[in-house]
Length: 391
Ligand SMILES: *[C@@H]1O[C@H](CO)[C@@H](O)[C@H](O)[C@H]1NC(C)=O
Ligand SMILES: *[C@@H]1O[C@H](CO)[C@@H](O)[C@H](O)[C@H]1NC(C)=O
Ligand SMILES: *[C@@H]1O[C@H](CO)[C@@H](O)[C@H](O)[C@H]1NC(C)=O
Ligand SMILES: *[C@@H]1O[C@H](CO)[C@@H](O)[C@H](O)[C@H]1NC(C)=O
Image (cartoon, rainbow, N blue to C red; front, side, top):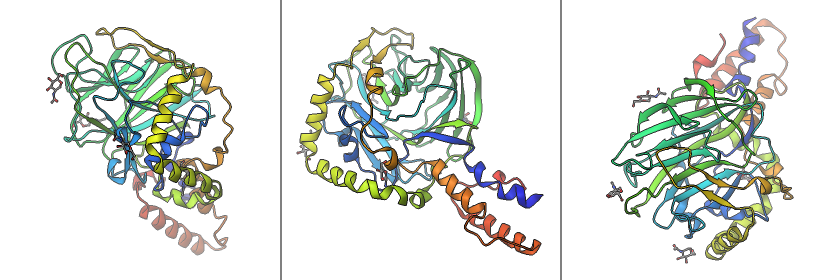
């Protein structure tokens, strides 16, 4: 029956279920990142791979930093510059890593993110950049001239096991949407991609890969190799939105993070009170807290850094042994204060659509009216495409 398939629609706004979400709501602030430390491993982000300046030099949150097609409240700016040396390395690095108790390294998962650059603080195409990479580099994006080569290369490329399978010329202002299609079970990785508000399409069908993750080694950010020349200290900005890890079916629509996440935040508001108080404190003491983060990071024994010297091969090890820290029990009550995820939104919508809060229709005409109202409401939501409807 048509009404049945219509009512089944809401579940298809998000095809799978969200294991972890790094989507920013409207109350997220840069000071929140500094609340994370090795002794306070709060979800959803680990923040320790960065230079010696204040966090606000390296990270920014703003509604203007997101893909306009995404319903995230805010997007993320990551910046590298001549101060972005972490732990005495020669690479410039600004990287966030998921903090979660979920298993992000098993089964068949989709790692979603959207990426953009601007003509202000654009990336320098003479350096090799590693972007959204795993520590083993079984899959990653790269930009710029491969380390060991010379010249300027404006190519944004997707690599699996060091081989480029897809590439595009980077255009400032364009939003590139991606989902890494990672089958940990069968050791394969593929790529889905789109531009702007378009739905994701498969651009590389899965290839063999040594896929693995300890759930704390996906680097959402940028690592720029020093190259052979003189280091250029100019700022480079990269923008991110729609970062989440999905299990099950792939959601191809962009923007399923949903601004309506506020509707599902009520359950977490009770527990978020204390963390916003902490955030305020952290903001007031930004310098001290930034210094503390540095100190903590420097003294953490788990950060054994094995950097091999670079070659034209893209599989340069930037490993940080975070595995042991990843197993440290998270003792803070963060599970309940996690950002409202696409799942939560979809579930809310589904529950509503399933009629739990609607009067039960009894006649065919009433059913039709309900369906029309639902359809209108759904079409009015951002990010919902008519083609998603199974009419
Ligand atoms: C995005 O647009 C560029 C042209 O600007 C094109 O080369 C590329 O194939 C598009 N990407 C996808 C995934 O369609
Ligand atoms: C990129 O870096 C190179 C090498 O340091 C430098 O000579 C060049 O001026 C930089 N280009 C831009 C556009 O900043
Ligand atoms: C870091 O933040 C503190 C407090 O806001 C400020 O006084 C200091 O100048 C900042 N440091 C840098 C390098 O911007
Ligand atoms: C916004 O996100 C933060 C970080 O995950 C969370 O602690 C907070 O509860 C959220 N606030 C709202 C209003 O959803």
